[in-house]
Image (cartoon, rainbow over all chains, first blue to last red; front, side, top):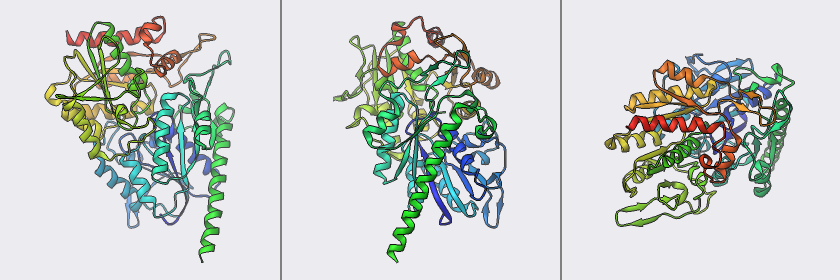
Length: 270
Length: 245
C-alpha cells in the first residue's frame, strides 16, 4: 500500500444512503483524469454492490505470480470486490468477523493493484469488524480521510453521528459529509418534494453543530440508480451531475492540500 | 440490504399487531445503528434489572408493546458501539435469554443488514423457540434484490422459514400533482418472490408522512389511516396473523 498516494474511505453509520453509488461515481469522476490511476476496493463482504453498480457483475478475478488481478473498468480504473469471488447471484457470504477481517487483509496484501493515485474503499454500514480492520490495516500508511454519506432525515443522522464518533475514536480525519437523496423534483409538475424530510435540519445543521465540512447535497434522481450508468457522461443534464462534480472537486482539493502538507512535514523531518 | 426499511416495517408491523389486540415484543439487534427506540418515542429510557433478568421498556400505558435495544444501554445517544463480532454475539445471546419478556403473542426481531455475526447468533439463539420465520424487506431496484437473494440463501442454509418478501419504497406519489414516479424502480421484490418460490407480502409505497411519523415516534396507523402506505402495511400484518391461526 506504499505505492498508493491517496486513500479515501467512504463511510456511513446508516445503510442504504448511497455509499456504493457514491464510491462508484467518485471513482469514475476521478478517473476522468487519464493521468491518474484509480482503484476501488469494496469491503462490504455480505452485500457487495460495487460490481453490480459498475456493470461488471460476473467478471472473474485471476491469479498470477504478482497476485490477484483486479477487474479493470477502464484503463485507469480497477475494482476489487468479494462479489467477483462468488459462484452466482444467490451465493451468500455467511461469515463471522475474523473471517471477514482475513478477506480484507488479503484484498490489501494480495491484490496486484500497481501504482495507485487514489484508492477508494467502499464500506458496509456500521462501526464494526470491517471498519476497525480497514483503519488498522491502512494505519501504517497515511489515510487522507473519510467521506461520510447520509440522507437528510434524523433516523440517518442518528447513525451518522455515531460514525463520526467512530472516526474521532480511531483518529481518522473526516474530509466531509455528503447529503444524498436531498430533495426530489417531480418530472411532471417540477415541484420539489422532500422524500426524506430533514426534520432536524438535515446534514447542514449536523455539520454546523459538529464543525465538519458539508461537501454538498445530491438530489434524488431515479436515473442514478440505473446500473452501469455514469451520469457525468451519459446524463449530463441530471440535477445531480453538478452536485457530484463540485463534491469530487472538493475532495480532490482536500487530498491535494494534504499531500503538500505531508510533503512539507516530511521535508521538515529530514 | 441496508436502508430498505427493516426497522420501519418492524415498527409498523408491531403497531398493526397491537391494533389487532396482540401483545408484542420488539428485539432490536442492530447494535451499531439501533433505530427502534426513536421510532417508538422511548429513546433515552433506562433498562432495569429484576430477579429474573432485564425488564424491557414498555412503549405504551397498556404495556402491549415492549422493546429491548442497545440504544437503552448507551450513555449518550451519539456513542458509537465499536465492537467486533464476539462481543456483539454475547450481547445478542443475553438479549434473547436474559430479558423478561413475559407472555407475548409476537416477538419481532429487527436486524441490521447482512449475513454475519448478528444474524448467525440470532438464529442460533432463537432456534430452541421455533421461530415462525423471516420477513425479508427489499426495495425494488436490482442492487437491493442482489443482496436479498443472498439473504434468502442465508435463510435456506440456517433452516429459517421465509414468511415472505415485502417490497418497500415502491413508488412515490407526488403530493402536488399525484404523478407516481418509481424512484427506485418497481417490481423487483415481486419477481424475486416468484423466482425463489416464497410468498410476496406486498408493495409499500414511499410516503414522507410515514418517515416523519416515525421520526417523531407517532402512531402512523392511528394518525394516517388514509395514507397510501396504510393498506399495504395492514395487509402484511393480516397475512402474518393468518399464518398463526
